[in-house]
Amino acid sequence: MKVEKIEAIPLDKKIAEKYAMQIAKQHITQAIKKVKYLGGGSFGRAYGIEFADGKKIVVKFLRANDMLDKEIHDLKLLGDNCPVKIPKVLFVEKAGDSIPVDCYGMERIEGKNALMAFGMLVQSKRKRDKFADEVTSALHQIHCYKNHKFGDTISPDCDDWIEYYKPFAKAVMDKAEEMYKANTLSEEIITAMRMAWSKFDIIFSEKVEEACLIHGDLNVANIMVGKNYKLSGFIDPLNSMYADREYDLFQFDNLTGKRFNLRKTYIKKYGASKLCDVKCAFYGLWNEVYCFIKTGQLVSIIMNPLIKNMRERLAEL
Image (cartoon, rainbow, N blue to C red; front, side, top):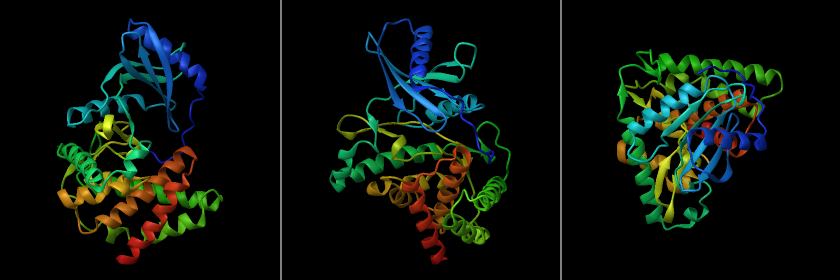
């Protein structure tokens, strides 16, 4: 994973909507009934397309170079190894003269993401526990797919997890120090990172024995639910790897994930390393700073709890 700022390719939402219709017509010979902007992060924009015959797809535009092959590869790999729905890619289009960014079409998973399904938050504990059980069972099935090497899903090449992860973590730390000196990273963040980095060898003293396939970004915003809040699929993998399976758990605590005890449920069912809590705190903080480095956007509602959690976990060492 490169630790550097990425400049997003400009893409106006209204123009992208026209592109979505254009590309959908090229690949699916049905009249288009409706187009809807579904949202997107720093480097992606997604549009829902509904056809006259009722068929629904999603067209996703990638506003950064070198994302397409990785996303297509990981969607298929995860889809082949997950018991719940992961969108199947229907067509792929490289950037060209008519459309300036890479894009692809995929199946649309019905429903909404669990973050926006507000009614789930007031469900009974029994129903929330059932949801957590289904999510963690599906994620564990992904983790059961293993490789003999750690690293990126396309070309894993490390014999040891720390051999792969520590250089990345060091690069994030170094960049964070540069940003702090340039007054673009707060003292609160850099202080927490310095404290954690000084304990790196303790935090990661337990050897990771298996290189497990991970989703990489499975928080409640990427967990889809349909009618009656039934789990309907996972979307938007990011930085999928053959990694420490616990690298997939810190996202469970972000946003409203704690309401469903997702991380605790996974650990109760499948076990964890002795230092899992502090490892997840480290993974979470480093990932959020990495995202800030890449995008220039800091999400306080996620970052602030990560800093607090890092300090609390370090105090327990």
